[in-house]
Amino acid sequence: MADEIVNRVANSKLITIDLEDFYPEGERVLFDISKWLNQGLILREKDFRERVKNHNWEQYKNKFVALTCTTDAIVPSWAYLLIATNISSFSKKLVVGNLEQLETSIFQDIINNLDFSQYQDKPIIIKGCSEKSIPETASVQLIEKLVPVAKTIMFGEACSTVPLFKRRK
Image (cartoon, rainbow, N blue to C red; front, top):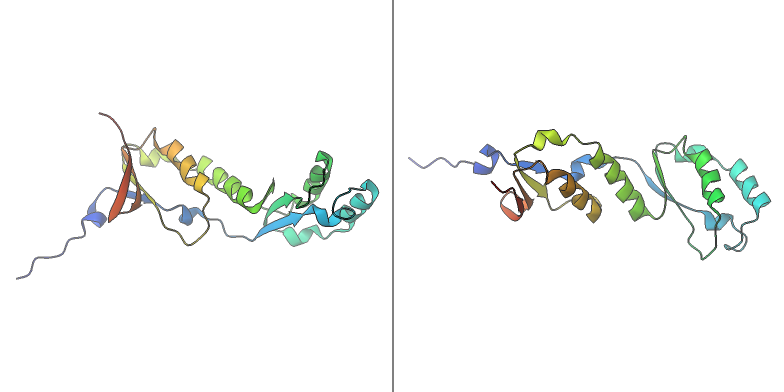
């Protein structure tokens, strides 16, 4: 009679956190206001306000939007704020910055809203590989929240983890 193969990982108390599981669906859009500037550099208030007024803001419905200016133009703060007053009622999330900063902000919100009490005194693995783009800062933010509650924290896969933290007894 052959010995039965037992999956010790599946039977353990290890909890795997895969940040990809929290990845919100929705298109990420980079809104470059330089296209609304004269020669990509000069903001003419009247022309700018006219573009804002006539723009189809509904196209950003349920999208994550990063407002940016890809030229070296000096853009007054009110320009971003004027766009925000129009786009924010449609978009899921709006930031000033690039797509990486947008993704970081999205995950910061997600992590800040997680209930970490479920990880109290538990061994945790933060899954290392993902198919979606998860910002590095998301893992760091996750660690900040887990260290006060977790018994141990590891990184990688259950079959080969890198130990990161172990609470002292």
